[in-house]
Length: 101
Image (tube, rainbow, N blue to C red; front, side, top):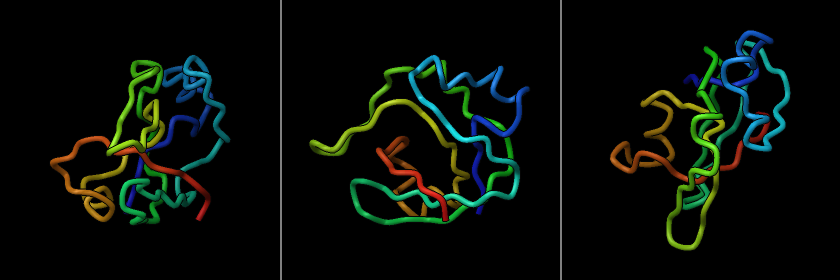
C-alpha cells in the first residue's frame, strides 16, 4: 500500500508548500511508513511513501467532515487500494489522523 507525501525533498516542498496552510511536516523519503486512521470509523491502514504530493497549498482551509468530526487541509494522498481500507471510495475525502507506523 502506498501514498504521496508533500515533503519528500526540497523540490517536492517547493511545489506542495504545506507551510502556506500553516502545516509543518517532517521530511520523509520514499519507503517511509505512515499509519492513517479515519477519524469517522477508526479504521486504519499502513502505507509507504511512493511519491510527492498532494499539492497542499491548493487546498488550504478545505474541510472534510463526517458528522461533527472535521479536519482541514489535504496532507496525504492514498492510493485507491489504501483508501478503500479506511473508507468507501465514493466518499472522496475523509478526516484522518497521520502518525508514524
